[in-house]
Image (cartoon, rainbow, N blue to C red; front, side, top):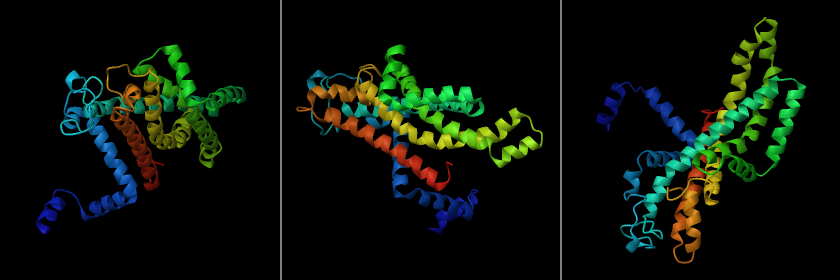
Amino acid sequence: MSGIAEPSLQAGTSAADVSVGRGRRRALGVAGTVAAAVVAVSVLAAIWPQGLGGAAPLAVHPAEALLPPGPGHPFGTDESGRDVLARVVAGTRASLVVGVVATLVGGGVGVLLGVVAGLGGRVLDAVIGRVTEVAFALPLLLVALVVIAVTGPGPVPAMLAVGFATAPGYARIVRGLVRAARSSQVVETAVLQGRSPARIVVRHVLPAALWPVVAVGTLGIGQAIVWASALSYLGVGTPPPAPEWGAMLADGRTYLQTAPWMSTFPGLAIVVLAAAVTVLGRALRRTGALR
């Protein structure tokens, strides 16, 4: 054992670094560690689907249609003989990309509205506040469908729809943080020192408002994955035959009695990935990595 440990320290890793790394791993907890492993496997599946899925996700084999899970097809096949495992693995990329991009869109729009409302006058604050309150009160799926009705269906409109639908939540958070930062002692001191308003906003107000949004955004990715899958389930997201979990759920509705695996495995993938991202985000916040 000593022969293994010594080269690692000689390579530049000190005992203190090792202890810190172990402490961080323990701080994540069992749930956080498992969630991190699930997210890591999902990222690998999105980057290299052939390595985990094996078969081509779009390859049609009518003679092998609706085969139950078994050797050669661990997740079974669909009505066209396509391997469900290959399609679930290939669909990871679409779900992750949509979830991350939609969160970035929602966070970006929300930050812009929140900063303008927090720094603007009473009239501007009141107008943005009323708009965000109305949008926040509406069901998220309804807001997303309205955006889809304007932009048309497709993967990019689905990202924008979910992003715009989640933006009011981020806007309310940022608006409150900006107003709190404006009245803080640090900002008051900077004003007394004669610093310019632009410098005060950039150096004191924005950092206090933006970093908490990053922490909230890690939790929002899981929500975005679920809602993007819901849009595809309704037929307004990623079009077939591209592998996407929500669309696969919709395709399996007709075969729930004869081939339930067509919907079971995509549904499990949505639940597991969304839960893993959310649990990992909470674990990172507890450790102090995201504040």
